[in-house]
Image 1 (tube, helix red, strand yellow):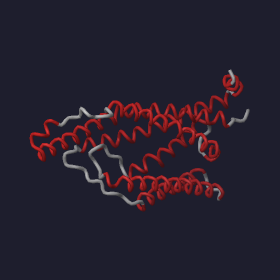
Image 2 (cartoon, one colour):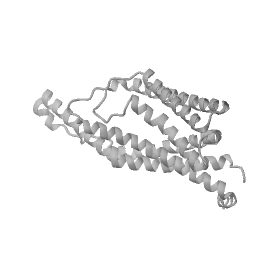
Image 3 (tube, one colour):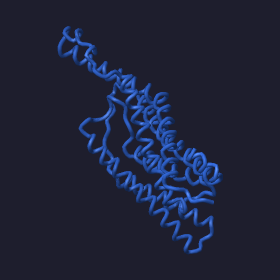
Image 4 (cartoon, one colour):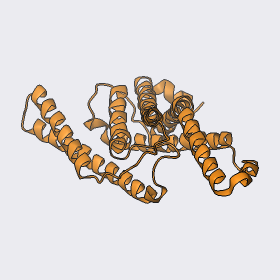
Length: 260
């Protein structure tokens, strides 16, 4: 069986990232965007009420006619950005997979790719969401943006460290000759303990929710945002796994196609 070249690896990663970006964009438009529109409407209503209170009848003359960028244009820009970021993440995914595939559980490239994608979702999606859940417009203090960004990066770094330590525990258990069942149990317990430590030691920022913002809007937005990341990583993992599996299974045909 012929060795996979770096060009092929990166190509698979880019295509998988493209699929992840499209999947993420679909969830954005279906689940997240409706909640953003609701939040913007609430924010605009609050601003209009404040203007009316402060300026009286003069506020009636104010409208959004001078709006430079429409919401639809923002949506298109956001969609393009999501796809570009997903392609870049797909490239990173391909590099990490090439270096760590032998350490990942699974009997096929598809299984190993999905395992890596699951880890990526946990590290870059679920763990940060548990510490600093995403909020729609009109929620959150703009002055805490830098703090939230630093906290987000910290959670990811600590989560990556936790994943590395978990693999180290699994390797140690294997070296000690533990039975498969006990090895998996020890590894799973280590993962839970390390994840708990990350959640405990990471600072949590207070995010007061205005009374006028419905609770269901917050939760629908947060669930939708998490589903968006889950869809992206699932598509990247599955797409990369299928492409890699097909090439490894039919190397000659794949090579002919690449040079056609």
